[in-house]
Image 1 (tube, chains in turn yellow, cyan):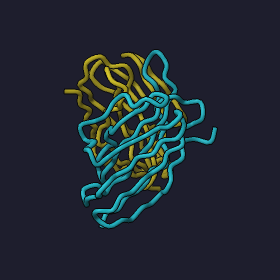
Image 2 (tube, chains in turn orange, purple; image 1 turned 45 degrees about the vertical axis):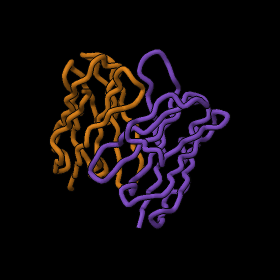
Image 3 (cartoon, helix red, strand yellow; image 1 turned 90 degrees about the vertical axis):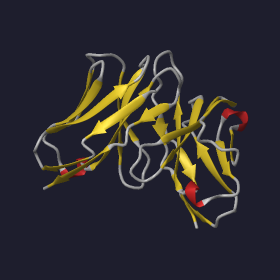
Image 4 (cartoon, one colour; image 1 turned 180 degrees about the vertical axis):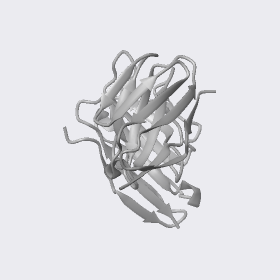
Length: 109
Length: 115
């Protein structure tokens, strides 16, 4: 069964304290892995798509990487406005995205 | 590009009533998806359309749920005889189907509360 597990469930950082979020997946025939950001009461906001192991993508303070078993979202020198829930999802044989439960990030100044 | 829009944003209803939600996708996108999200969980797939054809439905989608996408434009999701367990955020997403994985863009969601 296709499965996505995110860790940690919650992460508290001080402003400027870099860290990484983990997304491990078990899926047959990965077509793509996606990262989204979700603010409370809002829909997920697209961040990155990764297609194959070894691929990396960056956007401002965020960098996403992909291996054959997991993906990392690295946050460099975070700011309070980076506080949100970060969701990881995979797309396999079907078109539906399979999501993890997310990591809730809190950054304090 | 105005993004995916959903209406209403919030809906409070009594158990047993019917409710209908609307989703307007990004204009050039040919795929439209419905997901449901409960507190502390990631979104769960319900159904999707390619143009006007409904191609896949999740086992989560009971026979009280029905979705349509007339003319391949906007979509509606109707829940009949609502139950308290239907309380959730209902999310719509759209994408432009390409050869590899297609990136799905989400709307703001409709928050349903069943009393």
